[in-house]
Image 1 (cartoon, protein in one colour):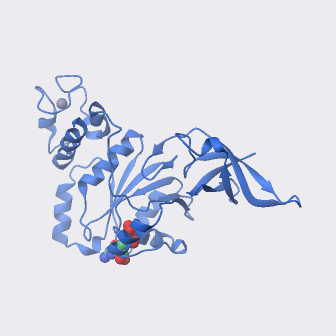
Image 2: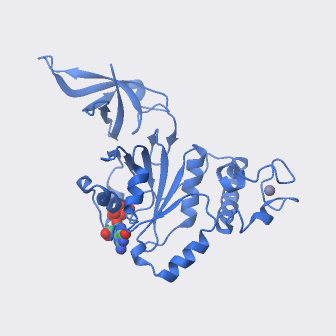
Image 3: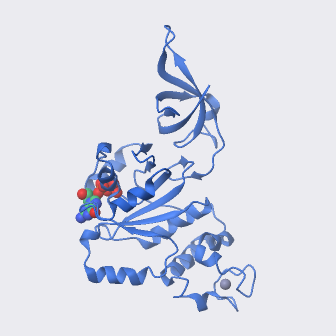
Length: 292
Ligand code: GDP
Ligand code: ZN
C-alpha cells in the first residue's frame, strides 16, 4: 500500500496523489463511502494501486484507509488545511464584513489561522481606503489588499500561500479565480461574471479540488458558498472563537462572562481599543443567532 492525498473528490471517484506526484484515479472501500469517515478532499489515505494484466500500474487504485484528520472544514468538506484565507472584494460585490467574521469563527473552531484578502482595490478611491483603515483598526487578523486586475498585492498573497494548504473562502464574484490565475497563469481557472456563476452554481454538482502551486502551496478551490451556519457551536464557545475576546478572558467580573451586559465586564473599556466595535457587533449578532 502507498500513502497519498485526495486532491479531488467527485461522484464516488477520488484523485489521489502520491508523494512522488503521480496521480491515481481511485475508488474507495465500501466503509469509506458514507458517514463521518467518508473520503473528502485533503484526506491523507493509504491506497493500493491496481495493475494491468501485464503487471504495469493502470493508473487506478483503491483507497483502503483514511489517516486521522488534523482538522475538518464542513463547507465545502475539506480536511487537513493549514490556514483559511477569506477573500472579499471591496466593491462589486461590496465587502461583507460579517461574513468574514463568520468564516473566521469556523476557522477558529478548528484552531486554524485566518488571513483576510480584500480584492479589487482598483475600484476604490483613496478616501475610501482611509475609511477602511479606520474600520479595521484594530483587527485581529492580518489583512492583505490586492487587485487581480493590476496585480497590486498579489505577490504578498502568493508568499502567504507558499508551502502550506490554504482553504480559500469567499462568495462568488470576489475574484478568487482571477487572483489564482494571476499568481499562476497555468491554472487557467474559469472566471465569469457574477450572474453567470450564480446560474452555473444552480445546475452543476459541487466538487472540491486541491490546486497545486509552483511555490509548494496547495489551495482548495471552493466553488463559492451561500450560507454558513454556526449551529455546531454552543453559545458559550463563541467568545473563544473571537481572539480579541479570548485575550481579555479573566479580566471580567465573572469567569464565564459572555460580555453581554454583565457587571464588571471588561469589554466596554476595550471597545475601540483592543476590540473593534464592528467585530463586537458581529459577536452579539452571532450570540443571538446561537441562542435561538
Ligand atoms: P470568483 O467567483 O471569486 O472566482 O471571481 P472571479 O475570479 O470569477 O471574478 C469575478 C469578476 O470580477 C470577473 O469579471 C473578474 O474579471 C473581476 N475581477 C476579479 N478581480 C478583480 C480586481 O481585482 N479588480 C477588478 N476591477 N475586477 C476584478
Ligand atoms: Zn465580559
